[in-house]
Amino acid sequence: MYKKILFPILTVAFIACNNSTDKSSTSADSTDKMNSDTMSHMTTAAAVPELPAVPEGAKVYFKNLKQGATVTSPVKVEMGVDNMKVDTAGPVVAASGHYHIFVDAEDSLSSGTMIPKDSTHLHYGKGQTEAEVTLAPGPHKLTLQFADGLHRSYGSKLATTVSVKVKK
Image (tube, rainbow, N blue to C red; front, side):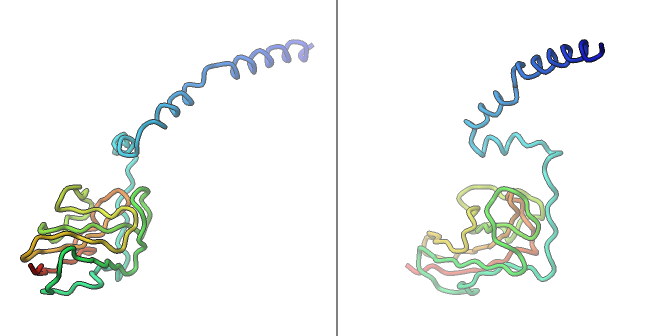
């Protein structure tokens, strides 16, 4: 007797659940049309991971530029890092990040500070290890700053600065 009653009830419940409108798939379709910048601004503070710790012995450096060097524009910049992995912008992964070059700006940003994107803060979020930077003739200060996948500075521990002179 229970089979005669239970079977029709479960059948109706199963059909009702499978015929309902799935609102999550509608939302997913609309978010597919959003770009990554729009999606990144939708992240809540609670969902943002902590800035990873800087491993012992990690450092960044200019491979080819020396303090006081005279260079020509565009300046070829070769970037290096020890004890960290160069990765693209995006997910936050321990012991990894990407480069930023500050042109005639600060020597570093405080740890955890988001690096602005403007004419003096150049981003290399595709994992680039070389760049060409166009500079006017004269003295310039270049800072190499390493940051996590969300463009948050690792601070002065992973920054270095050189002064160069661009010849006319």
